[in-house]
Length: 144
Image (cartoon, rainbow, N blue to C red; front, side, top):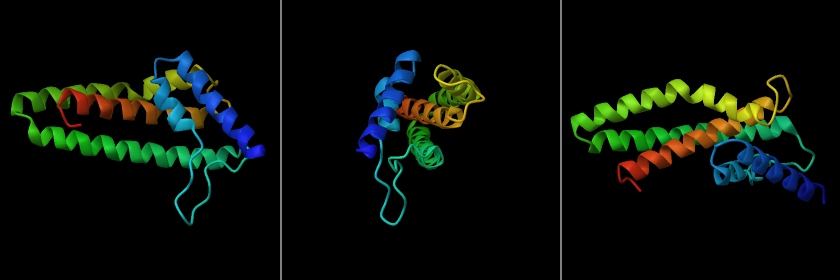
């Protein structure tokens, strides 16, 4: 029963920050949904609201989202003519320059920067923004 309540709280948490900020709500819900860990590792949601465990899982998700974005970006750069590569590179640099600020704004809608949960929320926001950027590049340049 504890695991179920924790799952509901986590889902509700993701839903609320999704409503409060223009981050994609579906991506935030997916990012905050309890996840089964790979064999031999801990579960991401132990049913006790262990924020450190959830932060570690959120960070793994952020790293994976960043890896997928880099992969799609490299695919696009290989396929595009020089003029479009320059445009994508400039666009990517602008996006990167704003990423931390946008993640901070996203996280501040739900938690104050000094709160214990703030780093967790900020990581979820970074993941969501990164996944959105990857999806945009895939759609824009026909990489789906």
